[in-house]
Image (cartoon, rainbow, N blue to C red; front, side, top):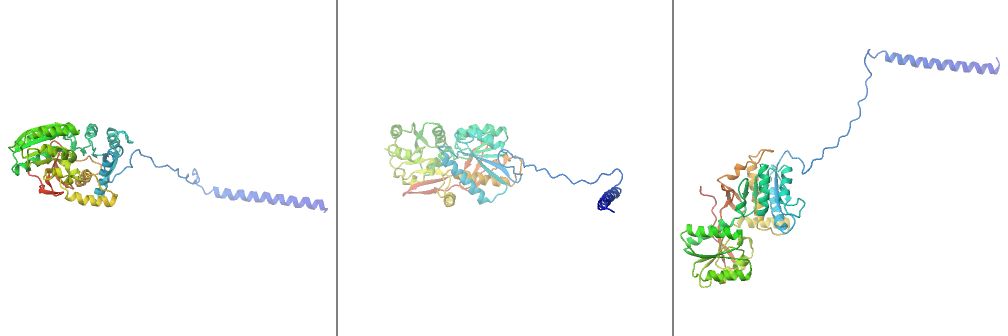
Length: 403
């Protein structure tokens, strides 16, 4: 065999071997296919999972473990200091109670703030699911918030001292002037004072103070010899004091204003009434320097007690590095009240507004208080006397209420 023939023979053998290999592979596949049942499809691998990002909710995160409470206070603008102090106090109350049933979220009521005012802040809070509103601070803000909250079935615990905003689901926690005036007049009557004079500023606060003053003196069997109004200018204050003094003598004179105004008017108002006591209102208790005013020595004023507040103020200072505003206790006590009621407040249910009218009342930093039918907090007040550069309790606050 020639070399060329040998090459052709080896090539033919390789082609035959390749055909046999392909045939063998085909037979093997056919054998495998034969074991699949008729009509069945081969199993396929499942498709890879599709990633779905979590839904993003507007407002604060959804919470099914706690009831939502809104705190409406000014966090910017001219009253930001008071608002921040109240907000800090609510934080302390949450920590002190250790509650896990309530969540408090703060909303800025300042017109220049992110919410654009109290009304918008209330709507924002309600949209976020708030079932109770603590605040707002100012009476004009409470008038805006009240109808919005009422329409949503959300009660409001306002920190205002204007009893005129109470009702229709709005409750007033602030220290209203009428109660302090009635208390201090009652104490003066118990000390033998029968004749009175008074000075009240122009405006709503003065109107409410003068009404309470006249009623309290009349109810106690006393007599008001003179009641004068004034604008908050030195000349107007001096003129009112002179008109009051023209009816001297009397046993006590009410000056329903802060310590600075009372001190400037005291000497003139007491002219011709040696030994007369100056009577103040709850505004005096908000001034730490009130006892340092010698013109007011011997003066009496009624207010909430300071014993527990001093302890709170020390704790507050230790945590936040500065002292609180006196009104901060309202925020603390509002949280205590909420936590107490939360024991019977199912998660997600409406706040049980009827519980706010518990005749036994509530206890807090400012002592005992309860809400009457008018929605105004009735408070157990003490009477203090300015004596020797300090204040002394001369008539302790009652620990509860007579039914």
